[in-house]
Length: 258
Image (cartoon, rainbow, N blue to C red):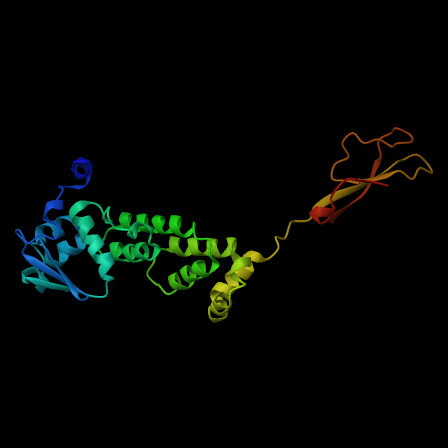
């Protein structure tokens, strides 16, 4: 009953809840084939929920698939595609009884499939889930697997790459102990150079300081400071006069009394 209430809330903002027709032959008029799997579906549901399917097999489609009873979808991860079809029908892409919600690789594949079929918000949501999962990974070997695996995908949102870069920087010292990670850097010069640039010491702008000296004859009191403020000669209690100014490194700009 709780699930029905949840879906009713989603349906009110996103469209009619069609969960009862998911993976059902009832009223099915198209079979989607992908990888070595197939699923009975309904063109009107697909076309209503997805711009991709509307153009492919909707009422005004000019493609041959519009009149075909079997449509083959290629180059998609089958698990991720089934999850997307579940989302189209039920507004959930993860079954409550499955453990895929903690599988970072599944969320990567789902993000790619969701974006391909026009579900941009869901695609970014999957990347967010991916980021939360990989942040909890402690073992360097597993973290290295995440980094080297994600690097092979060319069609991920930029945000995923930024997440991986942040992971590398935050765990770099432990990752460098792994031969596999060092080999990865040697074969990915672009990543190596990015890391080197981020690890370069920050160059601070030089600071102007002034040298002041007591004006009393024979007095050797001098002070170097950015601003004289209320400093007075310790012997004559007079305000020193400016002698000259110079530029020094920020760490050397502290006030010095001679």
